[in-house]
Image (cartoon, rainbow, N blue to C red; front, side, top):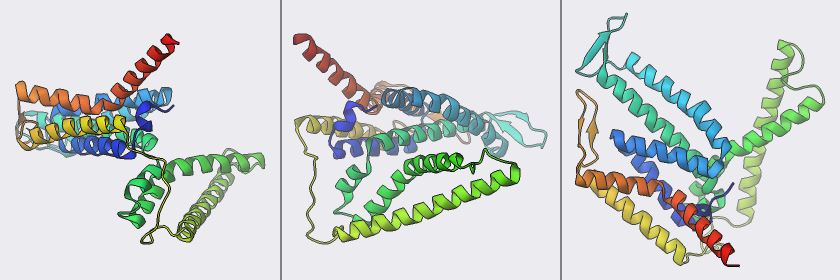
Length: 296
């Protein structure tokens, strides 16, 4: 399932994710973390449907709970002592709150990256950075698409091995292990060959040479300019507020930060609007499409 935001210019897509990634990692304010996490869940579900629901609730939420529980067991900083563990170390309110915040940030980043992989394809990334950092952009492009390609290929190899009775589900423990090692060996060989073939193919096309021209299907139109302007206005407004300390929050030794005010509330709303730009774009274009159909 592809949304309307994916059809926008690569610069618009990349600018959006650059702001979202930076703010999700930089702002540890509880409200900002909640906005980032909830908006990431909403966008992933809007983008990928049931797959995102399963991923979010089967993988991300349990990961959050585990991270939130583990942190207080190793982090004993904080002034508000709730009780003492059997090891004699204190269990503090601040360590629990920081564990929850860290788990929320981690889950939000994983969710945002899953959306990024759906929208920012390798050809978009190479289009943006191919002339600036040709070698690095090619390596990053190959790295970002490696995991989905690896998953698809290992499924193909496993199915082929199953047809001849050499899958990890066939035989005893030793035979299963041997079959698994065989599949892993095949995948490693395929990965190396694919990397070499890609490098040779790009080199034969003159990739990275000075003066090289390239065909591109991407053109910046009025729709893209409006979306880019909205992203930059919201992003710079939130960034300015963060620099001024309106989104600051500390967890140690005691929890303290900016309380709700007119400026901080406007920053939270702007941050929410920034995170929901793709969802808003999708809903607006869907409404326009339905309005156009009703006139026919």
